[in-house]
Length: 417
Ligand SMILES: Cc1ncc(COP(=O)(O)O)c(C=O)c1O
Image (cartoon, rainbow, N blue to C red):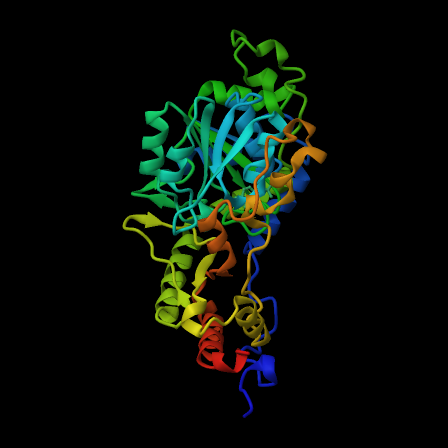
């Protein structure tokens, strides 16, 4: 019996040329902004020009007092932790399931990341956080995974009860919100990446938000030394004398990256509206396919749809391994289907199992192992990720992907054994 599946010699469901998804959308206007910036200045040492313009737009968009642009999301996270005065030995409860850069800057500061498991959405589980609070806990870091806001009501309750600082990594969630409140505005401070595929992209870059003046000044001291510190630290501020050197790190954004991001920010809400429409369509079309569970969004939650996360249930396809399903989808030409690799439970990474060879101070102090976080590991193992397109003209391609899923799942028996 011959199989229609491309993996077994059939004709692929998708013939369109690749890439099927590119991000961010770059237009002549983007090019104009970058060329305009090129003609103006490619090195900015203080809060002026494109840096001030973008920070002001971010402050306005998020409704916060301070925004500081950085060279990357990792830099924003490092500055956020340092500015929140996270000291060696402090325990910070962090998601087991996140991109590792949410947590690795803590290792630079000598703090102890305490991993906690996730809920069914892949977001930090407030109940597991509560179980891991000790007398040494100083803060909680939450990531809004794949653009869906975490359960902030419960996390704020836990943080409030134990007088902990709540910090956010909103790198997947630009413009996402809960009851109208934007991700990145719940905690004392938040950090965002603006690298390539992020909902708000600068190519490379990041930023930090806070309403707290002391966190703001310390952020400047951490990564924006000299001119910016001199201009902005009030002379009476007790650390103003360090303005020349700050803490010695330079995390400034490149002005050309800022020009890209400023252009993109003007379109962010339109992108998210388009993505929400297409995500709803994709979920409706894939819902009910055996083996596939589509995400359910809570009431009053707006996702940035950084990814459409499908959960695979092998038992509905007679135990067909996810690897086989994935290979079959790829063979059908569904090249954008992804099994996230580096965004994974941190306990699966050598850095969190045996960090001692790279960070001697952690020898014997961090020794996570596979099996420690069953929910995160189960989600990671059984996740298929699709990008979410945002333009109506993308629907044809979206339909090709839906056809590929239907074809493979309808014919899954050919893949068994
Ligand atoms: C959740 C999360 N945090 C932090 C980062 C790090 O950001 P960057 O690559 O801009 O340093 C990323 C990047 O992918 C991320 O996904």
